[in-house]
Image (cartoon, rainbow, N blue to C red; front, side, top):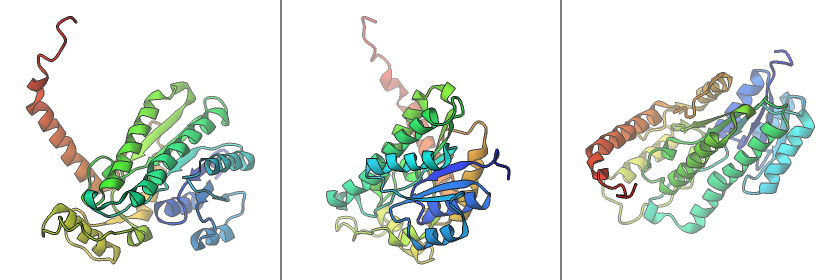
Length: 299
């Protein structure tokens, strides 16, 4: 790959899961990666640092809940490589618990990471692509969301809320950007992909009011537990995705000249979104007449 073709990536949450898979794949393709993580000394990243020179891989300590950390990480990117082509806003984590059973002391830190942290990365990414890159060069921002950012997901309600919030913010930002900046934004409502994070995800005991067999939260919880250990319930909530294949799809996305605002990735996520769109369309038409006669008389 020539120097002209080589791109510089900035990826958050790279110590495991999709972030790590994306880092590995971009490096294999010959690109340059700024791999950020709370613990850049994690074994998988240390292994990569032993294989790739700093001319191709820069490990940066980044806690996305610390805004100064984010600024510093982008400044290190500018100092080291002088430009940036693709930002993957990926850091985040989930919590399994019914809405009624999710305490604030667990939900709020999750929002600090999934919403405020991701929002600050988004802001700094736009600033870098607009002001550090040559005028009009722009770049790509890929925000890793979740199918739960479009559709409510039983037993992951507060996680779903954090993803809904970030999708709304990212979509609004995409509308605000000046086309002359040439910054392309894509939201990726990702399906369920098997990672180590699935097993590590905090799973609170079921709320006592939600113990009836067959309830959506029970089915979802069982699927999460079984999938974490390699099992399956045969339900739509099973975790079937291969994270390495997802990384390849995201790389392909980064190469599109006119990327979509949303790329729903994963058959499970697609099914959830299709079901929601169908229901929204049906209810919109069914109750359309309720909006008749609501306009002011003086208009």
